[in-house]
Image (cartoon, rainbow, N blue to C red; front, side, top):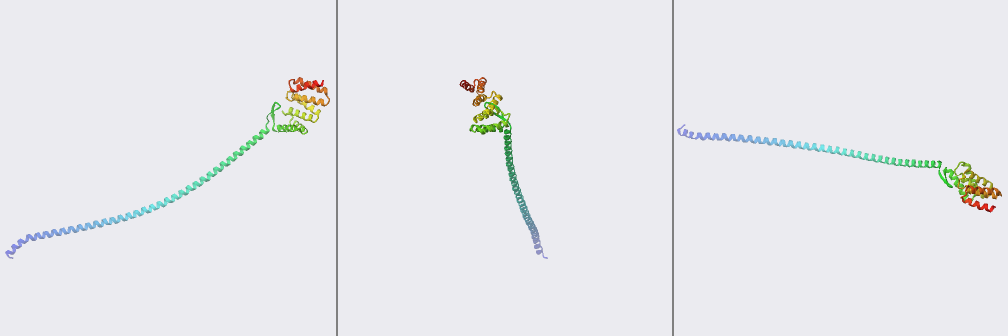
Length: 268
């Protein structure tokens, strides 16, 4: 090799070494870029795979949640329907029970009304059977309902002027109610009915019975005056005078005594 060549080579050697170093550095840079790109691609692939997997999981979770929600909704609807049915059944049962209660209340009210009516009827019958106070001719005494009814009936007949039936009524009354508080009054009206029918002897007997039974009776003076009239009709004048005298002596302040004095004066 020539000297020139050697010198040229010497000049070229640093340039060559620099060029080789630059090429080596370029090759190393190229290699590093390729690795980075592969890493980036690998990272992208993994990210994509993660995204896809995440989407899939989200889709599955959404589907699961949707199915669960649908099941829950269906279960809730079934529960609601069942609850509604139970409520309707409860309302129906409540209405039925309310109807029974109302019917029982009506039945109870009806039973109570009947019991009240029955009690009133019993009380009424008892009152009819039990003696009660009456006042006749100023006298107060106990009387039975039938007793009062029969006396009032006979007296009503007398006041109509039907003396024959009045006599029958008072005779039956005195026979049926021997110890009645009405007895003195019944004797007076019986004697008056007989006097009206000119049955003077019978009338005298009943007027005398009244005075002997109840000398303090308000009708006693009238009975003596009527008895004297009967005796006059029987032509028993002495007996009539004696009756009038007894009347004046026993009941001097009575109206009958005043009438008896006038009659005695006319009889002398």
